[in-house]
Image (tube, rainbow, N blue to C red; front, side, top):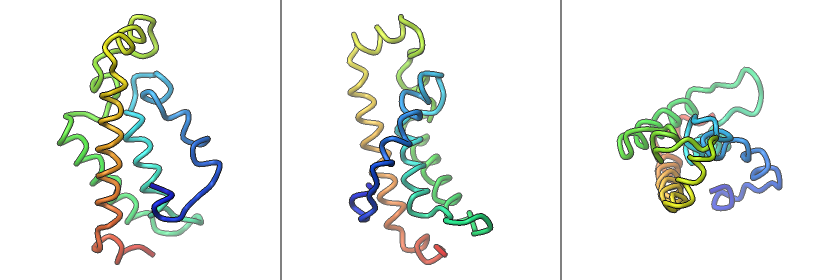
Length: 127
């Protein structure tokens, strides 16, 4: 997503690493959703303290609603039905090729983010 908006940095994949696998295998938010929030923040986020957060918050709320409406959750453990911090969960993930589900979640989260970023009503609110 950042490349499509001509935003590049070697730090982008680095800063996102800990958010993967349900926030580092803690059964938290789906990494695709976390990444999508970071993408929205990259586009709508503030650059300095004191700047408005409203447009970013509206965009993130839309993302969360749209993703949850499609998949019934934004929680990694609920989405893949296994606990990645356990050996059993890791084995379930691998043996059931759940990485394909994760790719689907990532693809859909990207589509949602792109639709939000292309929404002219939000862009007119961007400061």
